[in-house]
Image 1 (cartoon, rainbow, N blue to C red):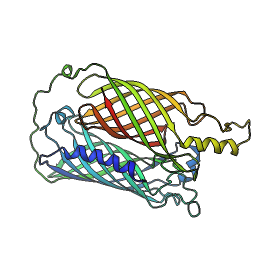
Image 2: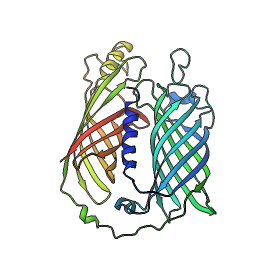
Image 3: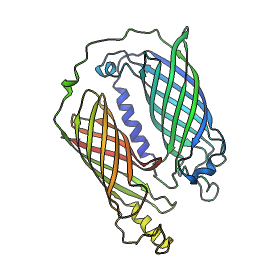
Image 4: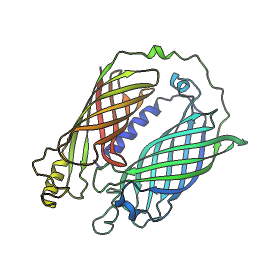
Length: 368
């Protein structure tokens, strides 16, 4: 069960990539990086003792317009990558990460933006006896995503090119098991790329106008579930059930706007409420009565970015019902959806409060 969220996430990206049947030209890029850990909370200060560094190795396949979405997104690349990062900290050790990604291009294809989703493996996970200072990684297998923004020049010297820019990489287990503060690193990257094949001409057909994608307001029901644990280690993992009811309006080929409500049945909070009811005296700022309702209700706005049958969903929500004072009143969600049929979707998402992950959500839903 520990790997379910990560496997589901990778599955949908693999399904999306497998739609590309045509033979594509490809290239390899190799980069080194060095940077800093972002201190998103004071309780990870002891984990920041140096400048993390490492390397990134990626294999990329190019698109040339055989499908409409290739042209709509300015002929992106898709690929696989591996990166190694040494956090320069005795408690964190080193991480290995494997991911699938898209590269999107701007400004005459010299500015590249990459989005990657995958999983990581840490050398030094939390252990009550041998590594209890690592409050960032509660499991050996982690969720990983990273973002690259780079200047890229291909075929600078024959088939060899140059690229340089910045990367944000995030590791956590989505609070599948405590502790799970997570680590976010900002780095500067520089490297080389090598094209294995000759360049091809882009297909430049006329795209349908945005008006052809206009739809009436659609109504969605999303059921999200998984396993999570409270912020205190060894309280126990519990199933959660999150129900989303929302409407969306398509505003073009790429986008739809959303608004709706979430109902959260996060059962691990029942155990955490009981813990704080005995751990703190009545009147303390963290005290809560053991009978406090664990359920929460939120309202949110969101955006859905359509890429073929895959879409990327981002949402920003606010709790309107939250009897137990836990985390902030604002929450976020980012996830990938895959439309199995026209109106039926599945996917995986990460629910967070700022830089702190709460849950990795496996999703099924319908859009009517």
